[in-house]
Length: 341
Image 1 (cartoon, rainbow, N blue to C red):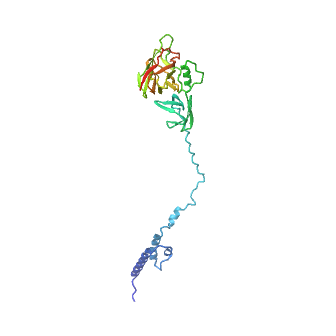
Image 2: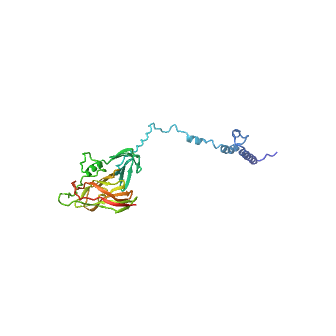
Image 3: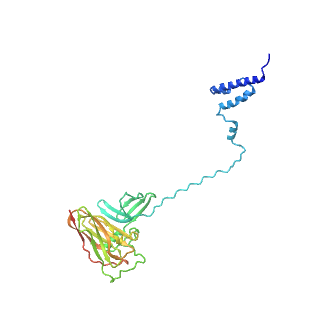
């Protein structure tokens, strides 16, 4: 019998191997299928099945990958200890800036003292427990000072205005007691500025002239302004005074310096309104100028009830020249206005 040629045998074996691989790929993968060897095949079929077996187990890395992840026992190694990380510098503690407020006045009420503070053109009412400008908490308030807590830093700061007491004595003709200088914000009569000429020598000029300016009448419940004006041949450095009004007829709304004392950088101003209708005012200017019908003081009142004549008078006044000498002035009649219903 004639033997089939070798090429035909090889083709048959290759076809059988390909069919076996196709059937094995369709079958579910499992440990038994991976371990069961194929029946006796030729070396050619073994080479063809190896890639298929590797494709069925992608989770097992090749020897080359394992060798890449392993540490090299003969690699160079440094035994120097690692340097410690540099310590993080702590942020500096916040520092409280100088107080931005200056004393502007106080009002004595039955419930206690209300102190008014100014910062530029703004006016703040300082009561215990209040927070001003979001940064300063009012810790305590009394007749001579306001104590603050600077919230960002926790620093306590105090604004003193005890010099107002000295102005009351000066306005009443008394001598203030010797004391340490008050805070620069609270000095109502600062020393004369260098370079200011002294022009208050006796006999050079006549007495100063004072006059009131305000409405002849006002309606009950309405507010009105009254200004005190002065004309003097001498420069006025300070003018502590005491004013009076009837608290049953008028209510004090505000007290502020006139244009003559309104220079913010060189002027100081303070006042206090008392329940008995008296107002103590301390006002000064380190760089005084000549006064020709100059506006010294502006008062705002609210009328309470209708009267024939509501009066505002100057109980005492001490005009001081550039060298601190008292300037004489003519008598001043009270301001009168009619409050209509």
